[in-house]
Length: 232
Ligand SMILES: NC(=O)c1ccc[n+]([C@@H]2O[C@H](COP(=O)([O-])OP(=O)(O)OC[C@H]3O[C@@H](n4cnc5c(N)ncnc54)[C@H](OP(=O)(O)O)[C@@H]3O)[C@@H](O)[C@H]2O)c1
Image (tube, rainbow, N blue to C red; front, side, top):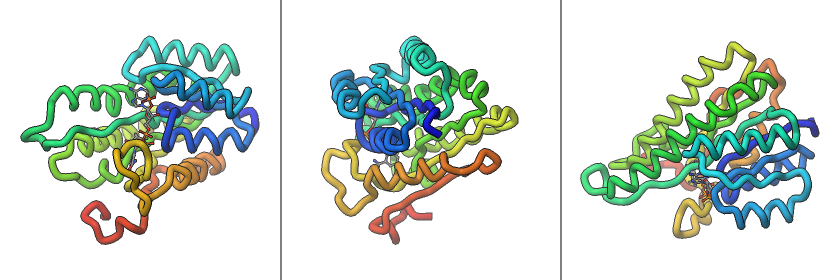
């Protein structure tokens, strides 16, 4: 599997970075995409020649097309897309949140995801590859007043709809739906919650399955969330 070429969006921290580290440890070639050029440069330096840092915004079609062109130029193919870039919402609920905050979040979480799938779909069909999408338990259960939760419901819908479009071409699509994960997504540490590495193992589990098997949807929750409203 060391010929595997993977593109990760939202790779500069948290879950995306953890998946990149586990993929590199297997000898995969990993294109790491995010907006923070400096963080990507540092990761590229640390992780070595198997990594290509791509400074790009998932809400820009031009950025994504340039990123894909760079991957194709360097490695000639694309086997796995981990569409993971995402951001949180602003407080205040539907009644009071800053609508500009909704715009930028929806442009990343929903439009940016759809663009990522569109721009990479030809390459992933060519390789009969695998697309893993980071949804959320918040895309399965509604959080009160949360546009973020609504954005992740859209992610769930996009994942299932995309599978129906590309599954017949041999492309696998997996939705990974974590509960709370201790990442930079939150301003405060969340020591009792999942670690990025936990979610990364779930992603690698889905990718490890033989080509006749698809992990359709995988919910992973911290035990510390048991008994809360978010747990189905
Ligand atoms: N933490 C949780 O509890 C939790 C639970 C369920 C699901 N998730 C989901 O997991 C995914 C990863 O989040 P995380 O928890 O690992 O948080 P994180 O550490 O904040 O990572 C978010 C990543 O997305 C990138 N990003 C944000 N906007 C972007 C844009 N417009 N274009 C390109 N990259 C962008 C960020 O990098 P730059 O800022 O450098 O662009 C960063 O690499 C998100 O989709 C999130 O919704 C998180």
